[in-house]
Length: 216
Image (cartoon, rainbow, N blue to C red; front, side):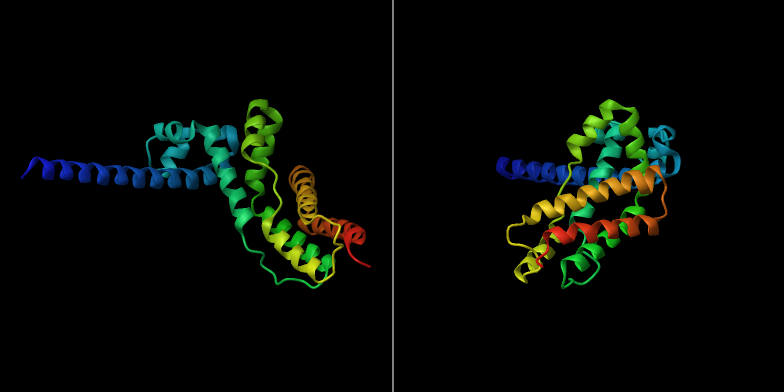
């Protein structure tokens, strides 16, 4: 075998090895994230040790520090994953023909989805309230956002003449999201208000809110 052929063989083997390592790391990260969701939800932040999480994921405990910079980083990564799911999830109801109906359906849908994530939500909020360092990191990595799926629905309604042309659709989406974050934090998590009451209050808010931005 020539020197050139030998060099190419070594390079190919090295490339294959790097791809294998990336696949192994990706698989380990996914197992740790999955295990983290289960352990954090079951034991809370303080009760969830890296040893417990690694055992559940069936990986070496040191990988939590290597891949996520520790337990705190793993939790933040999990929250980022949930946020990304929220940003990309499809709205599970058909487009509505009025602004009030669209926002009412949206709020009802989002309150129901947030209820599914309230265990991790409680952990995040408790950590933010008791650990200022964690709170700063969370604010840096978990920004507020306007739901692009809602904006698409609002654009349709504005073209139909249901929303005043002077109204900025991104601002509507941001204001609705701000309201939902407040309802999620204070009503569902801190006060443990029943979901049906949270939804009822949200629909009352939507009724008053749409009166000011819809076309008469």
